[in-house]
Length: 400
Image (cartoon, rainbow, N blue to C red; front, side, top):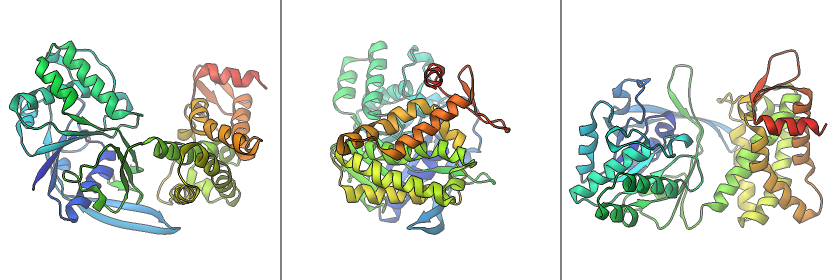
């Protein structure tokens, strides 16, 4: 059976992540097509044909320590809607019985409350509310809705915003009930690094992860055929802890020791045996046992994931700037590494030495640097800076 997916967003993450997954489902026998919906009024960086014609995705990285470089033909994107220039055409798509799934990536800022009358509403939750109201009016089935924005409880938060718009606009009660009871909003967790190369082509790392909470909907999306790290699950919490603790926590732990060692990018640091050894020991000896205690995931599973993260950090095709990761480090240490520090101390009765070293390195950077508003200028002869919470920076500096 042919099904269509309505995709809110045209950015490279959806192209390098979701289009690849849909193509994988099609390659295994499904018949799925994507209609892309423009989210902002600004001009697209690419012609409309970029979202409606076959294109090539390049997957580049390390797999089990070996370089991987492959190309995939993506032919599942075949329609494009611009609600800013053609609002009637956008709403008409709600009357398409083939559309059964909605996905989105409006960035973290997109799932937020922007009050507006229905006549001038342009935010993603408001557009979705208008589309779903037309869907209900047509008598067609309620869709499965999968937001891929990187915020916790993304599906629940999007649902609440759409319901709030419906209530603010005094939408028919029957629609509001249908919206709350029939539309299948799900929380999700996604993970893949997607970039553009020097020529502007979309590149992605080989690794991809998707978890969706709730009962499986394989009749709509046979995702189990995709040959990626995927699951339908009753709880996203342990997998979010795994990602935040090892992937994000590993990045944050690496930044300031690597900057002190004179490195500018993650790959430079990973080519330094001392830096790689520091990070590997921190992840395997401190974060993995801490997460095994706090997440409920098995140590062997966490160790496999950690080794995969080290491969991802060592991807020779990515130039991930350490200063970009340093942004808002005060909150990142609190969210990404403090839970592992506390769990490690609970397990062993002593602070984790390598997480402590990473934090001490951050503190030295703050104490030796110069605070200007929300910018920390690092000490040294070359200009290097990043933004952070000024009050948190001042507090750290005062502890010197």
